[in-house]
Length: 401
Ligand code: HEM
Image (cartoon, rainbow, N blue to C red):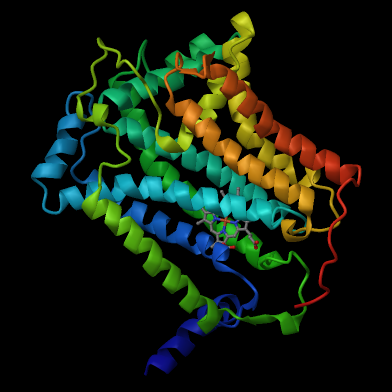
C-alpha cells in the first residue's frame, strides 16, 4: 500500500527520485574527514533554534516595559520554559562555534576555490545574516547588556557621512533605542531565520551542483566516491551524538557560562554599565572596530569600514588565492599563514573582551589590537602575494585517491 501511495506521489512530484539521487546514492568523496561534519551540524543547530524560538515567542512580549519580565516568566512559570530558553541561548553560541569551524575548514582545504565560488559566497551572506540575527536576538532580552549593546552598535550607523544621523533615527524609530526599536528587532528576529533557511537551501543546491571538495582538494573520479547513505548518514549521526553531548552539558550544567551576568539586570537607559562587551562571537570584529582610533574625527568611520571589510574580504578570497593547488595540505607557506591567522583571531577576541584602558606589559592594549588587525588583513594580502608571485612551491598532489 505504501509503495502504491509513493508511486502515486512520484508521478506527480518525483520525490523518491530526488531523494535517491541527492541523498541516498549521492556520490560523496570517500576521504572526507570529520571537519566535513560541521555543515550538517550547522543544519541541526538551525533546526534547534527555529523549534525553540517558535515556542519562546508564544510567551515572550516584545514591549520595552514587559520584555525583561516575560523572559523571567518563561524561566520560572512556563512549563519547560527554562529549557527552551537555555537551549535557544546556548544554541546561538553553539551555532557560531560550528560556523567558525565550518568556515575555517573551507579556508584550509580551499573549498572557496573554483568551481565552488557561488557556494562560498552564499555562505558569506549566511554568515552576515547570522551575525545580524544573533545581535538582534540578544537585544530582545532587554537586560542592561542587551540595551547598551544595542546603543553602542546602532550608534555606529552615525559614522556614515551625510545620512548617518538621520538613518539611525529611522532604525531606532525614535531618538534613542526604545520600544519601537525592540519591536522592529523582534519582527526581524522572527523573519531572518526563515531567510536563512532559504539561503541554506540555495547553499546545498550549489553544493550538489559542484559536489563536495575533499581534504586533498583534488577533482575526483567516479571510483573515488561512495554513496552518501549509509556511509555519511552514519558519520553525520555520530557527529550529532558527540556535539549534542557537549551542547547538553552546557544547557543542563553550565547554562550561564556564555551569558553575561549584567543581562540579568533590567535595561536602564539612565545607567551605563562600566564595561560593555558584545557576545563572544563578535569580539574579534569588535576589537578591529576599536583598533582604528588614530584617525581623529575619521576613526569611527574607518573602524566601521574595517569591521565590515573583515568579513566582506571573504567574498574576494576565491580571487586572492592564485595557487594551482587547492588544499593547504600541500602548501607549506599557506598552511603557516593559516595557523597564524587562527591564533590572531583568538588574540583579537581577547583584545575585544578587554577593557579599552587595559595595559599589557606597560603598553595600552590598543597597540596589540592594531597589530592583530594588521595581521588579520595581512593574511589575505600575503596569501595573494605568495600565490600570485609563485613564491610557494606546493608539494606534489595525488591524481586520484
Ligand atoms: C546556517 C549556516 C550553514 C549551513 C546550515 C551550512 C550547511 C552546509 C552543508 C550541509 C554542507 C555540506 C557538508 C560540509 O561540507 O560540511 C556545506 C558545505 C559548504 N559550506 Fe556551508 N553551511 C552554512 C554556512 C556556511 C558559511 C557561513 C560558509 C562560508 C562562509 C559556508 C561555506 C561552505 C562551503 C565552501 C562548503 C563546501 C565544502 C566542501 O565541499 O569542501 N557555509 N554547508
